[in-house]
Image 1 (spheres, each protein chain N blue to C red):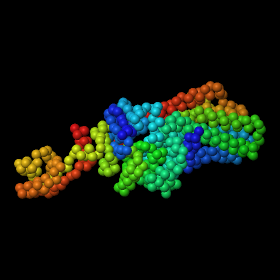
Image 2 (spheres, rainbow over the protein chains, first blue to last red):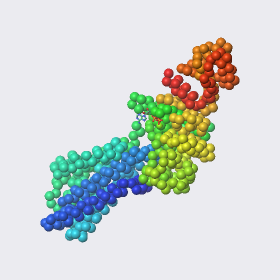
Image 3 (cartoon, helix red, strand yellow):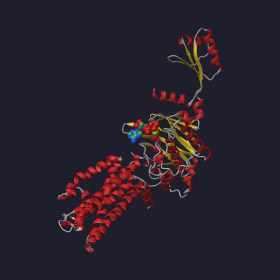
Amino acid sequence: MKYITLELRKIKKTSMSYIIFLFATLPILLMLLLHITSDEINKEFYTIIANYSVIITMCLFTVSIILANYIITREYQESTIIYLFIAPVSRKKILASKFGLLFLILFTLSIFTYGCIFLLNVMLGEVNSDIFARYVAACLSGAFLFFLLMPLIVAIALWRKNFISSMLISLVMLIFTSPFMFTQNFYAFPHLIPMAVSNNMLMTDNKLDINYPLAFLILALVGCLFTFVSVRLFEKKE
Amino acid sequence: MSILVQTNQLVKQFKDHKAVDSVNLKVEKGDVYGFIGQNGAGKTTTIRLLLGLLSPTSGGVELFGDKIFNTNIHKYLPRIGAMIETPGFYLNLSGAENLDIHRLMMKVKDKDSIQRAMKIVHLEDVGKKKVKEYSMGMKQRLGIARALLHNPELLILDEPTNGLDPRGIIEIRDLIIDIAKKHGKTVLISSHILDEVERMVNKIGIINKGKLLAEGHKEELIGGHGKSLVYKVDNIDKAVEIIRDNHLFDGEIKVEENSFFIFTDNDTLNSKITKLLVENQINVYESKIISPSLENYFLELVEKGEV
Ligand SMILES: Nc1ncnc2c1ncn2[C@@H]1O[C@H](COP(=O)(O)OP(=O)(O)OP(=O)(O)O)[C@@H](O)[C@H]1O
Ligand SMILES: [Mg+2]
């Protein structure tokens, strides 16, 4: 859709480009660092990745939260939203193009990060087709499941209409609930599911016990519900 | 004459407060309509209702002769160009890039439209500069360029001179006069500064506390209100008595703290009254003729409305 390219043009030359770049390279550098500093026993590169995969998913999630909040709230804070609304384009389409941009960037970023780490893995360790498959699965499932969470973030942004405020809400939500990831009842916090799933995709043993269909169902429901909420908030004419 | 904008008993209520109260306004093709009201009078709210950015609590809006609903507003939006309150832009992009985004949103194919609009508002040299670096006046002009970009028939400008210095105000005024005359656009322009719009409009609507107090041709509205004479004297009561006794003026005389007003169109009366007062040993500190201005008319209406 041409409106997605329009959304892309709006964020060029903003701080978002740096933030995306930073969060794309950060996990790669951290993994390298862990590899260099780890002791002999754990030297196998893939083991490090599998053990610390949560760093990758956290980075992906954080950057997608920042980006989602930014592309929504800036339209209100820079008073450009009025000029989108007086154009003969339906509000649903405008919102859809924002989700489109998030989808695009989330997948590109995810593929880039996991791709680079895989390449490092090739250079620094041993890989086989099984490991490659694990990378692909972690990358795609992570990006896709995170995307299902985007409506929730967008709904918060549309509700607050203020970057700082909606960022705080999203991040507090993320930070204070992440410890629950390693407990049994993390289904209560749907945003932990993508991390847990990505983690499991990479792990060879010590897997978290996840009921995949249930996890997917919960996320899909959250996605649908907040898509509905977002559309309602976006179309509201006070 | 075709009617481009008409509202019927338009009401917008925010909680317990009516921001727009039974407004019936009418803008005809070719008008330059001054929509005047003080801060908080309801100008922006009315304009948002016209553009479908808000839905009315009751009453309705007609654009280009058709009743507007949520479902058909998109049909008429391409025929309207608007600037509302603050001209908002993507600050990280240049003026031309901002207009290009609007061009695509408005589904305008012709890329030259950007340069053309920039030229009308005299911004053709700074098109590549980031909007972040624009001055307030440049932003206002860029806002007008955006409103003109898709060559609309109707231009709605909400306080386009807000926050500008006197020179900037004159520039914008000349620009709007130019756009209305040369490019044949119908313009609805809101303002709380009457003097500014008085010179460029042919029609006026005055809004106060959400109510449209008066609407009509500028001449009609002002014509109904003659000139007035003002005197500052040392003894007001005696002065009024003398004027009455000599039957110089039998109409209403309005007395204020240290001056009194006589409402008349008779210019020669001024010298007669001054002469008579001086002859009666009354010190006349000041005497002058006040021409009717929109300002006075407006203040009068607002006062009446508040009583
Ligand atoms: N979204 C809103 N919610 C509640 N009240 C509102 C809202 N928008 C406007 N108002 C109120 O409605 C009234 C009219 O506001 P409006 O912005 O239309 O005035 P205005 O004539 O444009 O004034 P100004 O010259 O300051 O721009 C004000 O009292 C304002 O507080
Ligand atoms: Mg206003």
